[in-house]
Image (cartoon, rainbow, N blue to C red; front, top):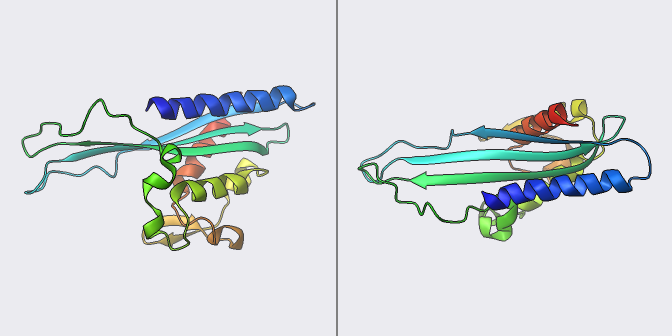
Length: 179
């Protein structure tokens, strides 16, 4: 989690540098986080319950016209496992790395129909969002892909097959928090 917070701080500092070196215009920086626990699981006969917290993080810089000039996306995915008696079996002192920090270690490549790891898809979505307004981001056409809301526009279908709905919500929060 410390590294996820470091990601946020580095993104914010990069945005401040962009503001200071932008050569005119006013920029606002915003941070949005969407958290849910819907990947948690109850105990079964074989195993105890699993608690999982997924926090989708968007750090943005927007210009005077309301367009994104910098977008950084990440997910901090924290899992806590328990045995059947309810005792924690996870290492509570383990370093929890975000998906951007894990890079290829996240291991999505084997399940990716487009041959891209999670961070590559998130980076492609960041690049697409750059230059867009909030309305344009929220207006992205999506389609259902086995319960996942994935982009349904030609410029993203070859590069993003992960669910982007929480990214969009986090970007919306970041716009609301922009100062």
